[in-house]
Length: 639
Image 1: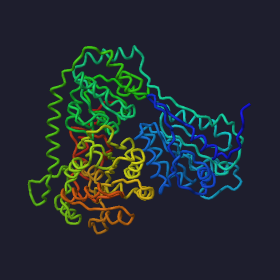
Image 2: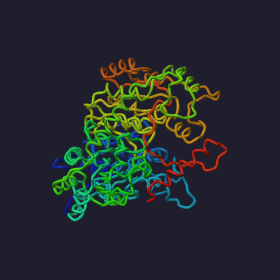
Image 3: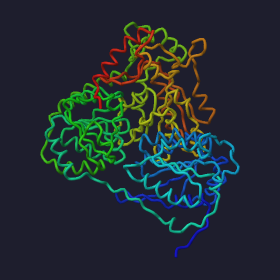
Image 4: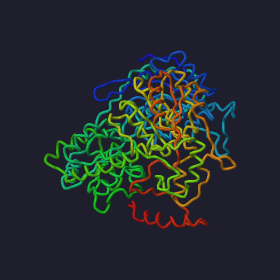
């Protein structure tokens, strides 16, 4: 008969986490790297005490904001291709509520993170306890019920022995590529400290094997026949391709058969930008070359993509009347999108199987793709040399709208710069070591980076655009640094996102994890301001202005200096070069405050984004835009 071990629920939890391993391609590693925490009354005396006494190999980091530390965990999981995770624990009430945005971010990106929010008393004797909500319809409802729609698996522990089945199920979900995502296990705070005699076999070493699955032979044969009859095949490289680490297979496949490569935000840098057939970002934030190739293609092979509206340009990116689709994905549900042939399997293994069966084939796409790429590189070169002169009547901003040069001149005066965002970004692409890692998430920067950033080293581009979470950029940089401690990490963040959430700067300083913040300041939510103006609306609540309509100016370099970062300001190429050189030399976390003029980001290239527009307005400019939007909607694929 097996021995029983007397432990608290929290002690059993930590002991179990120390014995979870994952094996992928013959390499076995611990699955749980550590625990991010902000302790409060709902977890400090339970999970906190257990971590203090016997953390095992788990690394323990104190966060500064629950959402921030959880986003660091999300980024860490992504950088490790879902093969390592952090657990995240918070107190009950607002502490756990702060985690919900991060859980949604993880779910949208299919990334495993273990959320361990504290909960109210299982006994209910002290109810209502501090930070407990009360609902008339059910006394059992707590804040943590809000995690249900944003968790791949959800459970609540109200007895110590429930922990065993909950954890076994949780790790099955997180280590399954087809279901990978966030798991929430909320533990009642009285139960965290309760003792139970656990069977010692529960704590044995468990290894989860990530076996690369391949589709059935018949489905592969159908796909091969479809490939062979195509003349202009195109691959959409999605996040699943990156998680599968299928970059070499995709690159070789494109080379061998003359296949166009386009990238989603999640898939970018899976294949080097230098690949001759890599057209770059696809869709609303895509390049001219990628969007032209997509319209020309007669076969679309989606690899690990969800076909979000930004990728599909709201279902207008492809020639749906004449193109066929094949989807490769570990999720059967995702393979059915675009009415495609389904190849349910691992991206890397499936491509290898396809390649072995195709034998003789070559597309007629090669010369056309070279022409598209050359055209785009010429456009990128133009964008690298934008010189803003608002006194020159010939100067036209990239974003053409009713903003007006007189209004831009106010920004030029207050920000003390006429620097163009595209010029600054391409300059940074030249200055940053190609092996360094960059991260972005929300605003105009993801669009510019998706189009303009050349990633010549694989898997160095990290964009959270599955949920486009403002505030992810800095916390995520910390997660990347934890995954790649030997590399420089650069967070590309707008002033709007910086104001949303930057508290994990303090965590980076506290644990000496150097990250570099490149803060693009145009004094507003520039991306959404563009959206307003481009659809006929007036500027409203998207600029950072005072009550007298004057431009708000914040010295973010002083904000960073106050935290203890090395900080710099750049308003032109020369100042940016000097600041970058000093940032590289520093062993401390850094922030470069880059002041750029509004309306100097890239505009769209032959793409459509279907957003809501008022079909009845007193603003004639809005009404003038309605027919164009409705026509594009009617031309889109309807299912």
